[in-house]
Image (cartoon, rainbow, N blue to C red; front, side, top):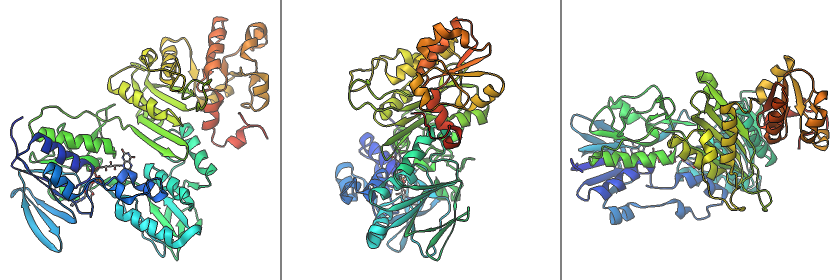
Length: 557
Ligand code: FAD
């Protein structure tokens, strides 16, 4: 490594900033490394904050991973808390720092900006305390309010993104009566609607009052007003409506800010000034699918890019890699994970794609404790490349999203998932792991062995004269069916095939697997047939109002 800096100043002492600082020290024992952090704490576990509110993390101190003293002892870092960097003088290579009422200048050879994100616009509380959930101060304030109100506490959470959902889960864990307000049609807007349905169901089943298509318009006289006219009594509002890159310092210093609102950096985290690097939530990332600039506010990237910046400062020519936006969140008993682009985004971009829905078990069904998950793959219909995935379920979701993330990073195609040799014993997976199974389905679509139809295409196809054949058993059919379906159980198709109309057929079962077998059989018998992808389970999850589309008093089990 060459070109060692004399003095590196870092703004922001949490994920990206502290990763950069510690990596830098591991590479360069001689550098002077100074960190300025506006808040009282450095290197705290911001991802753990919601779980302290809910009590899963009992000890507040366990959120505090390092102190200036411990960072001095291990890494010889010069860390200053309650020290806000006010401005950058690029000509003089100094930053102006306010600490303890005094303002001073600090010289740098290299500056790293890791100021994170900031809330878009603050909700103002008229008689109701409003907090974000971003800092130790926030959780101290939130728990103080809830403790003061006691057992009857009521909270409104604005925004059903990752942090909003984590806030809701932990408020409920504390016994707080909770309303969740979401501007869009469902929680977790990056999910496609049929994948978001279980999230909505989990929230309502846990007693959360979910208000979709609504925003908080006003807070006055101790009440929260929504733009749909409803008024909510609340002791606390948590503002989780999302964040934007904190670029104030960078913008004031004339650094290039991109169209996304994040600081523009190159593959080595260098800004438009070669002496200034930037990492973390404040910075634009490169989308792995189309190389466009994008914002991904995730801890893994902040840490990795902090390391990349330190490496580059020490002379590395190893560039950072684009981002797929891999993410996971828990909400009650559900785990929700995603990567890449959603179907909605692919449609909006006009990018040709195929979709696969499956509903595999977390491990072999005969071994106790298996949990079903809903898995969705988005696949480039021309190249078979994986473009995205969404998984919602319980056990095993985390493992599968990481296999898919690895596959996408390695350029493994959707069909090739079927050939991955994954570890198996009954308590961990299946001989055909959910990843392999999704690969088989993708392979069948790629080779034309099966044709599928999506849940949202069904009604148009039926209107055009297709016949819907439910190949589940009579008993399953009698417990609930898609309106208009005729029942012809899979095991009776060969004997009763003459009963089938001479029309395009759409077959379906519960999750798509028996439908595939039926589709293969019927196509070999000469029928024009497509399989309803993901079966009636996916169709039902996507139906706008399930209670209206199912015949009275029946549900699809
Ligand atoms: P931060 O870690 O936010 O650090 C920025 C720091 O800079 C702040 O401490 C701030 O005080 C300081 N600062 C700003 N301006 C100045 C200034 N002018 N002078 C001095 N200091 C300044 N990501 C995940 O991947 N998984 C999760 O489960 C997850 N959960 C989360 C839960 C919560 C409640 C929150 C808030 C975030 C969560 N994230 C999660 C996101 C993740 O924490 C961020 O992506 C990551 O911390 C970003 O790192 P950063 O260094 O850019 O910013």
